[in-house]
Length: 271
Image (cartoon, rainbow, N blue to C red):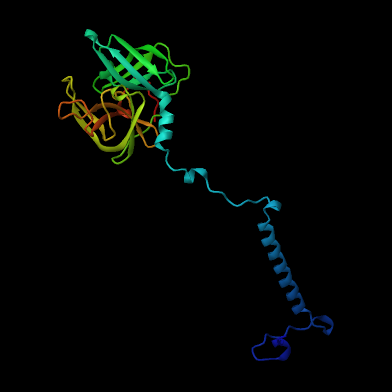
């Protein structure tokens, strides 16, 4: 055992503590050893207590499920929007027909679509995701924005309005959902390619401006369907596709009216 510097009088040893009353020296060394022993014992207890999860009410922090959940997958987004989708078949003057898409936007079952799908129609038939069909009438329309709101005569038993989203940026993930070429409930994916685009209306009514350009595939029958963001929220209504060849097929450029400027006569809830 090493010698105690205080007892041997070695150089650098601490100053001797004055004796207590009665000439006896207070047992500082014994007290110090007792304190050190008590601290060690408490430390050992703390370690054992923290390691024993069965005897402690404290639990290690857990990571939030949302921190690793990530954005919704395309499959989940389609499952969410599918109950809100509508197939629209319109009979036009002269016996011509028009095929398009729509989306339920409020709790009363109002359907938003593209105005050119139903403009001038004598009969409008809508088919919901549950397979039920009914007629519908135009409630409000905004030809200058190519949007219209339809009121179905008999809404579906369970009404599931789509969730309305805000603005988008170039490069954002986007999905187009509708009935291209009559292929019911089709979904395509892409990105926002441009903003504030203008195109010439086919009916000669001037330009349609302020549009979202995107590269998700759209074809005849897609018009009026919802354009979704990466969270599955409706950010636009599909209105047109670019057809420089004069042929109505997909060439990689589609356009949608931003939902914030789509009108709707107050039927669209705020984002």
